[in-house]
Picture 1 (cartoon, rainbow, N blue to C red):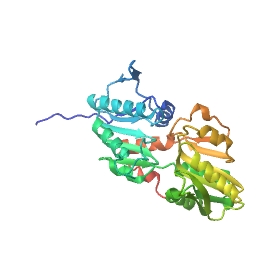
Picture 2: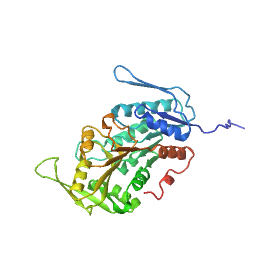
Picture 3: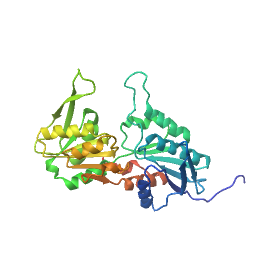
Picture 4: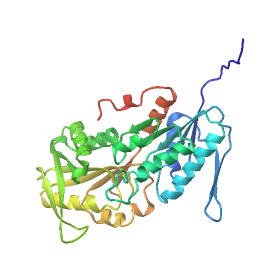
Length: 325
């Protein structure tokens, strides 16, 4: 007889970067495991140092890091952590990215522009990632940029269940804030059995980058409108769309989005908006300056934990969402 047989069992290990440790702790609690102790620090010149304080040899490693501000720092930290796992002989490295940075740069609009979403995928693969687990990508095609398995999770069931528990469905209309989000809004409308409306932006050809008119396509008068998007960054588009809905007779407007980026003037825009409630998931930490009573944050930790368990046990991540989208 040649060779050596082993009777070892598979081992799941969960790691977190410093960008959003609260979500990682929730996921760990759902899985019934502890986060692996990790030493991470910044040198005086800004370089990042990482060392894991437990052996990862032969383990199936799941590394969480959401790309929040300062986004480039946390992306670099994640790449360094992946490299450390690879060099420590991890059996597999699955990277959990609740919010995938640079996903909006998924194609070239003009010459001499990068496709940064593809570059991100290349960096992750080169550093040693075997699999990506992410959530509500800005463009579905980004999945194809990574040369390996990508599990694309959806916040739709969590968000729609919350909306359904709060609003009379007979009064509900789902609204897309622009033409680019119609497909997302259509899935919402199907799940909630509600009509669909669209806010169409018309621009002044004589003034660059300025929207002059928001036209509402669909009946919103006297309705409770749910504006849906994958992310809200500065809040300009969504707040302007909400104003257009109120101008067309909407009784109330609720905004629901997976990723609350909320950068720049977002805090003031949300505060001064007539929108009654903004609903986000905890894919990103909510900035401290956006501490408003009308912001509701729903946890995606149970969904992420179930996906991790399915991957670890060679199950089906798709089964989590069958019939939901």
